[in-house]
Amino acid sequence: MAWVGLDWGTSSLRGARFDDSGAVCEERAFARGILTVAKGEFPAVFEALFGDWMTPVGARCLISGMAGSQQGWVEAPYCACPANLDELVARLAWIEPGRIAVVPGLSCEHTGAPDVMRGEETQVFGALRLLGIDSGTFVLPGTHSKWVRVEHGRIEGFATLMTGEFYALLRQHSILARTLPADDAALVDAAFDAGVAHALRSPGLLQSAFSVRTLSLFERLPLNERPSYLSGLVIGEELRTRSLRGGEAVVAIGADALTRRYERALAQLDVRVRSVGAQASWSGLFSIAARIGA
Image (cartoon, rainbow, N blue to C red):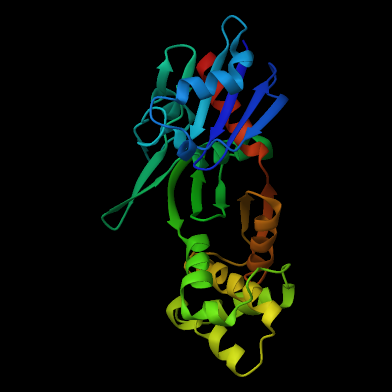
């Protein structure tokens, strides 16, 4: 069986071709996220970019991410938590039965309000396979960070925190923008650590964020260190809201630059971090594919 996996997000599109063991034989990446694809053009884009991978008889493709949203190729209804791999397989949205399917996202409830994810569930199941575990706490940093709880192979629940988006809003559209340099320099570890520490001992971001301005006014925070400090503040605020205990472990899934920041921040809480990169998506898609075969 020839298997193809796509991670089709809002701004980017990645694809992988697997061998029978789940190893990636070839990868491709394009700046063709769903926002660049007009309604009705998804089949043509798919054929142009990955049609050659689908020529073998019996080839199948699984797609995770925003391609299953209302703005995507086909809407894949959310699967309610708790959910395991078998429940995802049962809820696959087949575009071409037996050939192309979209992985459903997950939903859960927080105090009467829904929360959702698309794509992260596949990465979490992929990380479980890569690390050889079936339970744990996972963080997927980004514009909208996800904290996911897994027990015995089932995603029990998760929470979304708009950390990256709040950083951008404060960085570009608040009064703090006047005290920040035009561009972010390389991360200054000491400034980042100070931001995390201040957030962890603060009542909340609405108060702690103003320290970027006051430290600048009193010339206690150099210009080039301010973006790193602000980054530490918003990530520290994210961690402050989590129920984390010293000595526990967290799995961070994402790009090295981001997971390294979370590793530094979580060290202040004496929380250990294991990191998994982009291969988590491919491992998760193959895990789902193997269940279809079974």
